[in-house]
Amino acid sequence: MVAEVGADALRLDEVHRFPNGGVRHEDGSLRWDVERIRSELLVGLRVAAESGPVDGIGVDSWAIDYGLLDADGRLLGAPYSHRDGRTDGVRERVVAELGESLLYDVTGIQQLPFNTLYQLVAAKDSEEYADATTLLLLPDLISYWLTGRRVAERTNASTTQFLDATTREWAVPLLERLGLRTDLLPELVDAGETVGTLLPEVAAQVGLPEETPVIAVGSHDTASAVVGVPMGGSAAAYISSGTWSLVGLELPQPILTEEARRADFTNEAGVDGTVRLLKNVMGLWVLSECVREWRADLPDLLAWAHAEPDLRSVVDVDDPSLLPPGDMPARLRALAEAAREPVPSTEVGMVRMVLDSLALAYRRTIRSASSIAGVRLEVVHVVGGGSQNELLCQLTADACGLPVVAGPIEAAALGNVLVQARSLGEPLPDLSSMRALVRRTQRLRTYEPHSVSGDWDAAEKRLG
Image (cartoon, rainbow, N blue to C red; front, side):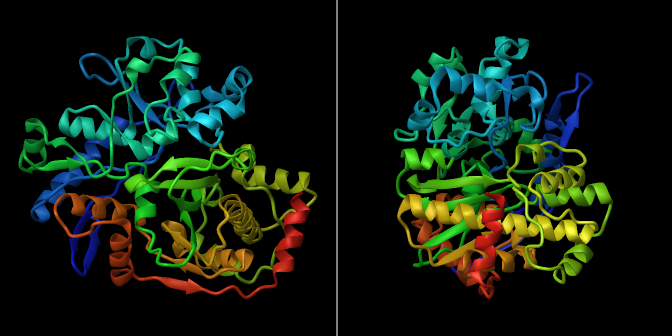
């Protein structure tokens, strides 16, 4: 993305896009073709350079996954995808050893089975682990390839379960108790710091000056997306809706209570010292896997799903069986059967079940976050690709009984460039000023709730 940021200007121009996904290796592992990602990003930078001057570069990506470097800076094997099965059972072993309360008291992180902590425990006996000198999360790996500097940006570092939620420094004693190597952890930096400038060979390859800065942004894409949420004075929840749905609140400090732990909320570091109290909901991954299996046209399915009966069938979209790739419709049918819900007989019925179930999960998560934080919410913001899904936005408003403000679509890219622009001298002193610029310049749509809340109460009770 190339962006222009000014006093009343905030424009994005997509200059390069490429498909991406986990690749199954001969040993059965699911990994990222990160060398291909690297080459495609260089193509994108070259196209950006051809479009005009580039004042800065910022990198954000999904969280948790990492690469290991040796002493010479070489990547030791393709990074694993968090959907790989090597962490099966690891969380349970770690929790049995340390206890959930200790893990949460220190890190404040949701107990997801693929957290970086569990990935690294699973890797302890591997040659890659033994030969490594540095662990870099994926956006930090890209920044290293651009600048030669090895760092960890805090918002993404907080997703690993390696970071102390209170001090925002590496939780060294915790990692040592698990026998993990703390010498692999790089220097921590904050969003807004300059990581470095382009290596000469990179600058020559992409056609940019060597002095072009690479600026640390909220390198976890959700951290950048939350910067781009157009929140104003109202108490607001947000849903960063994409492959995953990240549902939560922005707070000034972490909440490490037993209530928050039992509800499985995570406290991730946000930009400018904020905390993202949120929960992962399975998200549009479920729908996209169905569409891939059917080889169907999603816009047509969504149009027809409007006419389906409300809440005929609902399932728990956070069920672990929905995490891996594969035959998603079959797993959804199995969940419906197990919950004694009517099993949809058509693709359109299945789509409606998924969307109703997502809205129900959003409702449950938002109400729980509101209770834990003691905040009475007035509005829900939906950003990301899911903000284009009109039916899901309306269902979310109906389920939560709150207005839903949808947009912007590219919130993560906007948050990324806003942090860069401030570092480069644009007068955007705080998150409020950044979000005010988003509100002034981006297209937003509001959905008002119009269904009876009791229907959603009954649907929630059906799932127990």
